Image (spheres, rainbow, N blue to C red):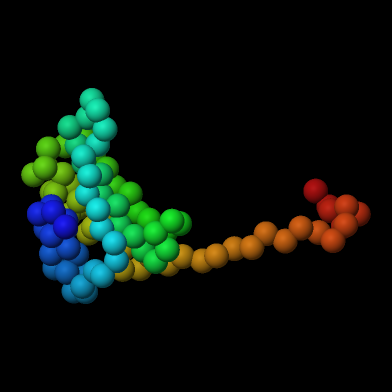
Amino acid sequence: MNDMEKVVLDMIEKHYKKKYVGGIKITKLGTGWTGYKLVLDLGNPDHRQIHISADLDAEDFLKFIEQELISRQLARVQYFTGVKKEPEDEERRTC
């Protein structure tokens, strides 16, 4: 875990009064960019991730992330799984 990730975990604990135990990763953006990307794993890391990125230096990125954590209210995020059911035969389709 790098220093920026530790700072974000402290922000989460400060603003939500809860300890975040999911996966967290902060990486630099690709070539041509100076910013960073934050990925928070919420449950299944393949399908339930929140990505927040910005083309900012490290200090401004952390300020941006703090504002995002406050405004997004991540403690209220819920995920549901939907299953698409096909009609049993073509005649039942109404669309």
